[in-house]
Amino acid sequence: MSRRAAITGIGVVAPTGIGIAEHWENTLAGTCRIGPITTFDTSGLPVSLGGEVPGFDESEFVPSKLLVQTDRWTWMALAATRLALDDAALDPDREYPFGLSVVTASASGGNAFGQREIQALWRDSPRAVSAYQSIGWFYAASSGQISIRHQLKGACSVLVADSAGGIEAVAQAKRLIRRGTGAVVAGGTEAPLSPYALVCQSSQDTLSRSTDPATAYRPFAPDAGGYVPGEGGAIVVVEEWARAHSRGVPQVYAEIAGTASTHDAHHPTEPPADHRQLARAMREAVDRAGCSPGDVDVVFADGSGDVTLDRHEAAAIREVFGGRRVPVTVPKTMTGRLYSGGAALDLAWAALALTHGVIPPSVNLDAAGGGHGLDLVTEAREAPHLRTALVVARGTGGFNSAAVLRSPRHQAA
Image 1 (tube, one colour):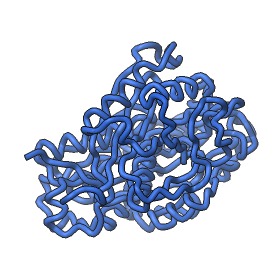
Image 2 (cartoon, rainbow, N blue to C red):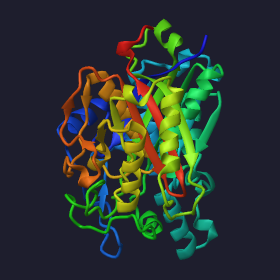
Image 3 (cartoon, rainbow, N blue to C red):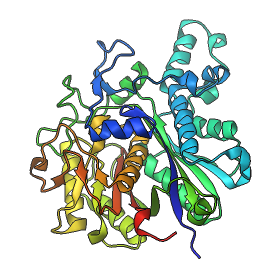
Image 4 (cartoon, rainbow, N blue to C red):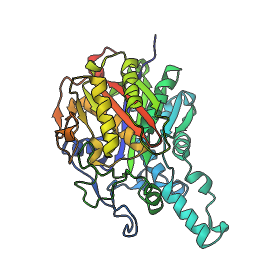
């Protein structure tokens, strides 16, 4: 018998809210949280807008001793993990620790932590640099700290694939479930809103320089000018389907039915000449889910906000779905692109959409889709028969990832 992977817990720390209740309420209201960055002076920087997480108090989730050892991106991962475990009613202390695993994604690690220690080195001396510099910024810090805090002693890893990383983490969770792991904490968060991080990002032509929150990030629009960065993300609990039901899990949000990844193998930063590899990732995810494009009820698009990349994605969607105008949504227009946290948040959005039978909206967009021929969802759309969702993500450097989630409401346990 095949071992199926189910999402049983969701933890969200995002510009749209902390916890799924606040996040979903703001989502359905189409609340755009892109705005001027408030935590530092951006006047000397090329970017002034971002998607900040309002009201995040790290001390509610992270012990004071650990706060000085870690970066904001890890604080958010620890918070989202706590929320996801609580949502799944999964107490690691009552579980066999070697049957629990962690897989997170990271695109840039602990930016603010790294900046602070580099400044200390430059201003003072090597002795002024924290002993935690070697681990506080490192990509694997969140996976390691989650594992230590909750004593999850199974496979522990981090995946680096830029904005495709969140899907890659969940795909690895699915593989671990298939190989015998009981439950996996998976997903991604990001904290790219610091001076050092924004300077690092500023070399990307696809980064929006707009100062108007209503027009700065408009994927598939004819006047799209790039993307806006955002912080936060999501962590999900992925469990073996039968195991989850046997322990009386409160909620199965969705089954991870199929995943796939491809690479453009074209250029470190420039987009490819066509959409072939993106379309292949989408087709393979659908095939591995055991369904056809006609079974997919909604596409959560990557929505880069770059004219060329948007054109490629629209072409890939049209190729995969033929003449059918499947609903397409880009809810990250409310938050900005969260890098490794973005695809993880899209998966959380898709799972909640399947649970509630509502497709979340894209904001600040025209439903006509800029002439791309897409059925863009620009207001929350009731979809009581919503069964299957395709989530698409791409990362700088040529990464393409896709995942198919299926509603448990249409399946037997």
